[in-house]
Amino acid sequence: MLKTLLFTGAFLLGSYATFGQTELWSESFEDDGTISGPARYTVSSQFYGGTSDYFGRVDAQTLIYQNGNTPTANTINVSASNYLGTNGSFYMAGEDTDDTGPLWGVADGLDEKIITFTGIDISGGTSLTFTGLFARGETSGCTASAYDSTDYIRVYCQVDTGSDNLILQFSPNISGCGGGNFNQPLYSDPNFDNDGADGVVLTNTLTEFTTNIPNGTSANIRIEVHMDSDIEEIAFDYLRVISNNPLGTSNESLEKGIQMYPNPSKGTIQLKKAIGLALASLKVYNLLGDEVKHINLADMGSTKLLNLTNLASGIYITKIQAENGTTLANKIVIE
Image (cartoon, rainbow, N blue to C red):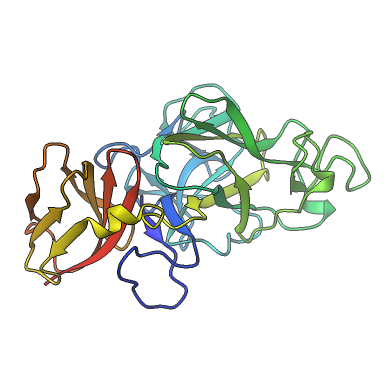
């Protein structure tokens, strides 16, 4: 997905970039990305086996576990009453993820659950970072802590054909609460040593954690979760890949060589490009970051008529990609 971070509250014309940050992709779990249209992600096993035995999408307001995009009659138990700081209405959550005897879902018999996002388009971005919101559900303090040395949240990233690298990890602080491998708080683990002693404690407020990832063309993100008993509650939300260099501004010839008019329009737009400028594609996104149109420009001549009449009236973002990988984003208005 493509979103540009706007701090002024106003839309920017031209390259549509602010303060050098552009959101290349995000996932906020507002619908079930495994079944709505082309799958946005895969999950090793979403299941509901009871209020303290589940892994999947949860409604933040009602604590109702979702069966696909349809609410079930089942709720989850969060020891801290609820997760705070969600982005939107839903998040991914899990507790006692051993998937034993589920009331809904397919048992895989494994304590570890895996969610994978493949083919994330990161072309055109530089100085990339991955960021996400993470939380634990049980209340703060040693008396309520239940995480053991075998429990973790791990985030991996692979860019193009490179290595599959661990980029974020959350582990119990085994030197906390009197020391030991059992019933400890859950922390970030910046050293990846399976001990969160050097990290930041998680609370029931979803908190942003950020790490650098390599530049490239395509990325795969994988999150692995292991929680094998009650009160070992975790949640995550609003995963993003951000470019810290504006898209479309590094290649001046691309910006100067493209015209789109009229704007605003009724949905029919003329695209004109300079001679010798080779384009690959045009994608249209709504303001939620959802891709709503994809147009192949590989065989385009000097002009191409874009038919967007099937889109509802409103503001959209177009992302044009050249054959050399550079991109240009602009705002369009359909009346």
